[in-house]
Amino acid sequence: MFMSEQVTPKEKIFTTYQVFVIAILSFLQFTVILDFMVLSPLGAILMDKLHVNTSQFGLVVSAYAFSAGGAGLLTAGFADKFDRKKLLLFFYTGFIVGTILCAIAPSYPLLLGARIITGIFGGVIGSVSFAIITDLFKIEVRGRVMGFVQMSFAASQVLGLPIGLLLANKFGWHAPFWMIAGAGSIMGVVMFIKLKPVDKHLHLKIDTNAFHHLWTTISRPDYAKAFFATTLLATGGFMLMPFGSAYSIHNLGITLDQLPIVYLITGAASIVFGPLLGKLSDRIGKFNIFCVGTVIAMAMVGIYTHLGVTPLWQLILLNVILFVGLSGRMISSSALLTAVPDAKDRGAFMSINSSTQQISGGVASIIAGLIVVQTPSGKLERYDTLGYVVLCSMLVATVMLYFLNKRIQKKLHTTNNV
Image (cartoon, rainbow, N blue to C red):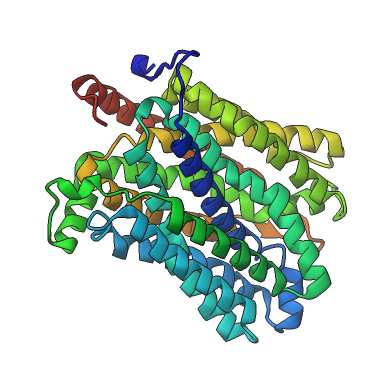
């Protein structure tokens, strides 16, 4: 356990400005995640309106992930050479422009191009945000910060997706993208006016050659272990997600009308448990919470992937417990990994780590598609096999995090300026 992570109840955890930063970064993550997620439920509308098949639609979805991953790698060498506020504003502006292009795209080729542009800019926002968190918040409270920022995933599911689908049904599939672009533009202006420069890292000795800086960050052994751990963490989550709705309907007997109820309740529970899990990770140790989350998630994955026809209330309960476990892993590991890079490498490390996550998620989705088979009746076969692969990735990720945790503890004992 991180003894230095404990915060006494009487301490004032965050300043007013830090609360503002958390709110800003959480909202940015909300818009970026919603932009990525909203496309999947719009699939039926898009395939009909744009006259595309399933493989073409799948390309639109994966194009975002792969362009985001590529952009993160290209940006990594330059990420520590600029004020992080300016970098965040630049990429968020590009993300808004890309989202507007999605909103006005009249055809499949133009929508595909717009998704690539959106991914190029949107994929870097998370890494810059995490670098800002690492610069502005001590390791002792980063679990709390990650709990709120990562809560945006659940919020986009509970609030964003239903509103986006409602707008799409009433005004057309372009409407959700206009909603995201409009809300994001307002927040961009607020960020431009209120967010202070984040430039202390510019006073450190940083490699002036961008490509050399990229290579030394990628090839450094302790960083490479962290990137490998991120690969395994992303694999576990992204393998189950693409087929979750089809599995619920065709294998578990849930109707299309009941499915939003499952997502709504699961997302609401994640919003409640996210900050709590972040607080616990600061109190009792990030790796400890990661292990607890892993045990819960593994148990639920083992049960979930072997289910037959299931009552709605049981599926909701299983989903809530599963997402609590997955959230515990995601929040604690994200906070833990912020302590890995040195201050001069934070931007590059976070960019590469974000790219690793994006690309691994895309590859995991492809692998899952090769494992799972859909019968003519719609039922999915070999979903249990997919579950075993996910369980193995979770076990190996835990081993990797164990060794990273030992190194971080040693680092925390030798310096108080993480």
